[in-house]
Image 1: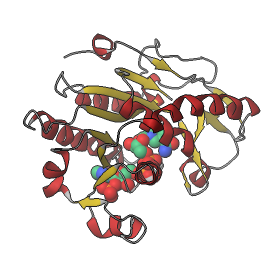
Image 2 (image 1 turned 90 degrees about the horizontal axis):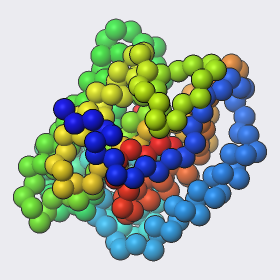
Image 3 (image 1 turned 90 degrees about the vertical axis):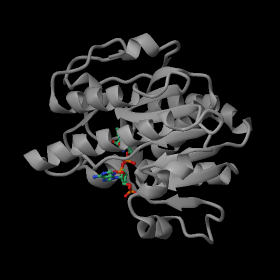
Image 4 (image 1 turned 180 degrees about the horizontal axis):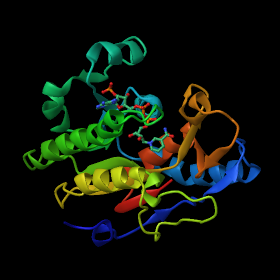
Length: 263
Ligand SMILES: NC(=O)c1ccc[n+]([C@@H]2O[C@H](COP(=O)([O-])OP(=O)(O)OC[C@H]3O[C@@H](n4cnc5c(N)ncnc54)[C@H](OP(=O)(O)O)[C@@H]3O)[C@@H](O)[C@H]2O)c1
């Protein structure tokens, strides 16, 4: 099996560190974020793309689709439930967006320039053995399907980019250690999930540019960490806003970055 490092030619590193702190946005965050957004926004001047998105109806996916649609890219929402997606992306507000359930994913992926893979059972639930199994399996199943559909696409209609989510959980957790992209994977359950999730994405055809995005804690008014976590004793990886992550995903779609990106 090919390792991530074999495939990496460039690594875009945005800091991620772990510290114990109450839930508040440090001032330095907004300064860093502004700098980063400036980098990301450079991608707004790129050619129009057709992008298929799994997990598009989720917290990050919704914002990504809004941004892509506002920037006049064509968006294909790959969902398990058309009716749910239609409520989230009503045709009046999102004219031209294509919504497809699983049996139609193939037709959507073929002819897309890029695929963004965000699907997976939310982890912010009580972890029974069954839920833990589903957290891992849901990610591997969707990623595997996306990879198979990309690999099976005839040349000419095959997407050239796969941006696939993973998480900073890859590194494990610590109250004292600082992790960066050279750190090895951790020993806990989430690290195992991330390793298998990434290994599945790495099976994509070698001609397809793969960006694995190890996402940290995302903050937003209508969901994410602010929507689900108590503000007390919150162990932070690196916090980022929903706006940052949407910009970063779009940046990865259109830049020439290959390998793992950390946000
Ligand atoms: N939000 C964060 O702070 C954060 C941090 C690190 C990593 N991430 C990762 O980034 C990705 C997107 O995050 P998010 O917060 O936007 O996730 P989310 O709001 O939980 O949405 C995930 C989407 O995945 C699909 N999904 C849910 N359960 C599923 C299942 N059992 N099988 C297949 N698909 C399922 C759903 O789409 P449909 O119903 O339309 O199919 C859902 O809208 C996730 O994989 C997450 O692990 C997020």
